[in-house]
Image 1 (cartoon, helix red, strand yellow):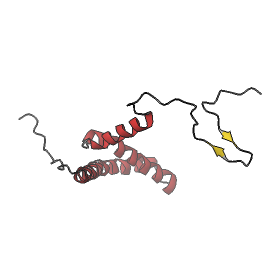
Image 2 (cartoon, helix red, strand yellow):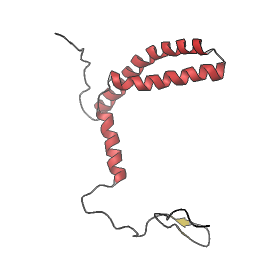
Image 3 (cartoon, one colour):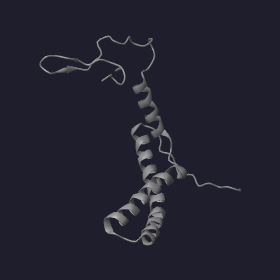
Image 4 (cartoon, one colour):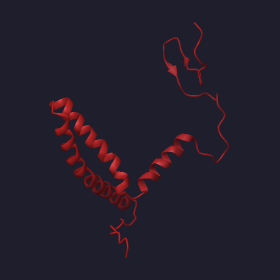
Amino acid sequence: MAQAGKRARKHRGTQAGSVDRSPRGDRPPGPPGTVNRRARAREQGMRRFDQPPTWRGTVPRAAIGAGVFIAILIAGFHQRLGASLILGGLMLLIYVPLTYYADRFFHNRRRRRQGQQPEQHQASHRGR
């Protein structure tokens, strides 16, 4: 049977069964001063934590939590769909502010650890 696709890198094994997975110069290093993809992705992920939390960002996570809660009620506790949806809606109303304030707590703690001033909560004054 033909091989489905060519492997990107060949794993060199020994007769004892150990496998050396490190590249031995198969791939030349990139130009000096460039950052590899993994380091760039890690940097972008860390930058995401530097952004202050928003209400809009907490709603999807709260909705996922409420959905899991509904699934547990239906599958685990054999509750009716209507009752589970009502309880899930109530949990969503609880999860949204809970998630926002938890995110804000961890964001401010991270800023304090980095030696920066924690952000103060600004009340929005729309229409004034």
